[in-house]
Length: 289
Image (cartoon, rainbow, N blue to C red):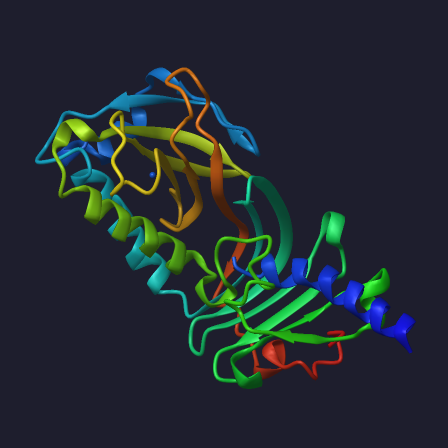
């Protein structure tokens, strides 16, 4: 009996990984004209991004005025999506360690619903969350290993167990949520003097076969009201959807590389695919709950 209890406890700990990953860029009138301009410096990032050149922006009212305008334009595009299928990857720093996960996702805005089937290292894992169901808890199921013996577990989305490997709960999953967080951040930071923020615009970046524009902002002066040192927002030119958000903490020294703390990427996006209730039903015979 004790052996089974120990086995169950170990398996449930493994399943916390499941729940943690279920969470889950001139300005002014010349923004659209910058697509044809390529000047130094370079945007140097990995994870599927082709290097691209930046254009410096003439200051309008504030360096964050134009980034906010582009972000809000993107918000209109994503708010037109009632639902979508996509592939999703996240990289989150939790207690000094970076966790990376990737999944195929079904998402519905109302009620907030997320189904995830994991790929790669965690292939076969499944997570389901539907607002208003299952006592507000998410369902998680491991496909292999000891945790598979336990079956489906239910966890509160904002519990310490569910967030052991993620900075955001599944209740805040989705392009609209992560974009709104950036907009709220930039609106708050725009209250401070212009010299405390630098913005760059990268008109031609490529991410997972998508042609993107990238807005980058950073703060040369550290202030406790600035939650991040550097923020990058990638917007798909064809759809205006926010397809990647990167957040970096302040470097430990002026010459040090700023550490990545959050990164969320959406690709292979299928807008409004016409999901049915079965797509978010734990009794779906294609699911393992």
